[in-house]
Image (cartoon, rainbow, N blue to C red):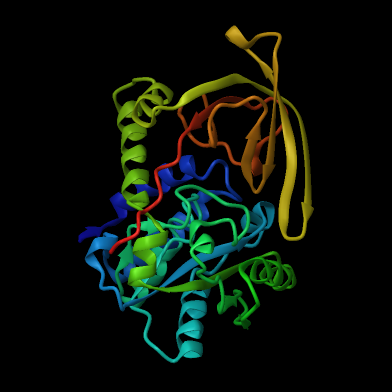
Length: 329
């Protein structure tokens, strides 16, 4: 167990944005929600999966919605606590811990608001080791852990409980409700025991995000190349370097889908790369990795799918995800 303070959250937010592969909206939105909770309620206890009991109860807490609306309709920051308390009331049992649903820049930092304000620990683990566009696209689903019952809340005080037949239907219904709530909302979901978490969640992802954020920050401070620092740390491969020349973006079923075309520069001059995304960067044509992140070539600041536009210069880096957790006992 260790305590997470605001300075730790700065590094976690930056590293999680890298691991999030351009996920959703501006990761600074979720970071500020977590930072405010830490400033007013104190530091958060971060525990490893090994440190929790098998019979404890854990729920993930997160932000759901489309990238553009998350910037235009800023959350109050208290919605996620309301969703978490509503879920706790629905199951009629205290929830002992919270965790990140997946490892993107928004979902990794939102749970800190729940942990700080409700004074419960947060588990250093998430459902995939990176970002996943839909709720069923996480490792707990493979282990039969349901996304529901789920509580979803908005800034106006509306709260709904979804108890669907499977994770895909939970995602589908949640996005329909989220659209009516203004295309952004907060959720608490994926109830599991400590034993289930140890078997199905990817451990140490917040620590990994913090380490990535530290390396980028230190490289900047020391006037070193932050892209190279990140590549060495993660074993990443520089897939491409160039400028955005075309972006096609559309909102469908509560997700932003589209593709961006990059014109190569330097050794990639004369070549093009097409990047396809659904909230996150998903496929870089002929890539050799399963986690794609798009970075500013000078600062290594992640370029989200929302911020892809004509003329943006970028480095496309491919990295391997961390290995999933193994079954305990």
